[in-house]
Amino acid sequence: MTMQAVIATRFGGTEVLEYREVGRPVPGAGQLLVKVIASAVGYGDTLIRAGAYRGGPASHAPALPMILGFQASGIVEAAGAGVPAEWLGRRVVVNAPHTNAGFVVCPLQCAVPMPAGVDFGEATLLPNFYLTAYHLLHTAVAARAGQTAVVYAAAGGCGTALVQLGRHLGLTIIAVASSAEKCAFAQRQGADHVVNHGESNVRDAVLQLTHGRGADLIFNSVLGDAVLQDVEALGVYGRLVVYGQAQGLPQGDLFRKFMESGVANSTALVLFSLWTVMQHEPQRIVQALEELLQLLVAGRIRPQVYARLPLAEVARAHELLESRRVLGSVVVEP
Image (tube, rainbow, N blue to C red; front, side):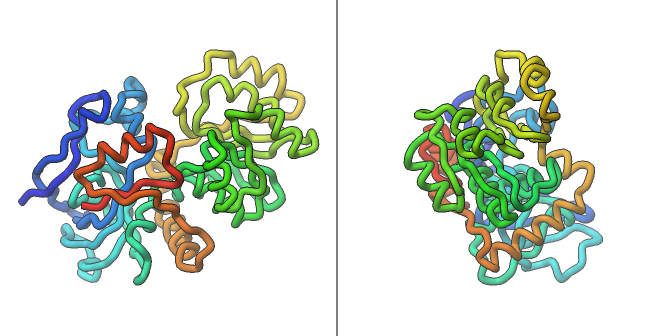
């Protein structure tokens, strides 16, 4: 049996993405075969496609050719040995790779039943963007009400989730974005303050907004040399959490900056990847997804779908993300 999928055949631009017919995966023992109703494309997918992580860990530099995509929602169509029969026909959200396809196979522990009435397109944004944000707040650090948090790329998939979940926790959110439109979008998601980094210096704005105290938490998914100023924007016991490198590695000496500007406040650099939780605490993935689904049903969070495109147009989704015009996330539907 076959299915349609988008394959990255080599590293490069969107021209390396091919929409074609491939063999349908077969579930093994303890696995589900899920018919994908909705998947998504994140900025991280564009970096993987471009080869930005070549030479890094296998989790971020997979062998090609491969099917991209790391999150999906759909309906269980078949199951391998050892899977209870009641899983067949269930609506599920899936935290697994290779989801930009008509079907995906995943271990039973990577799927969580979806309540009736939940939109597939919104739900598919939970297993990666919201899951990452959840563990940034609860695993990378122990965020608590009353703290001030700076969120970079606040209008993106994970940034939107961080703003909404941070607001839910009682954090004061300073959202950083690249345009007035994105700043306004972040405010609509619950940000208390916004900083357009094209017009203002982030460090100076954070210090002004906190009356010189500095931020308790900074969530940086872009890195680049701006991270050197982040150290100066941290308050006492502040934590700078890096979980991406959209702008590449800093050219300056980050460790020296911490020793010069951060040691007096006992600040710290925290590196985070959702892959760590998936590999070492998989039970916490399920627990977090269940909690996120409850928040979605209760209306406490609302994933923002910027565009819904057919699976055949995944390349266009990549182009939209690379154009930096997207507010929220792009969903693809087979």
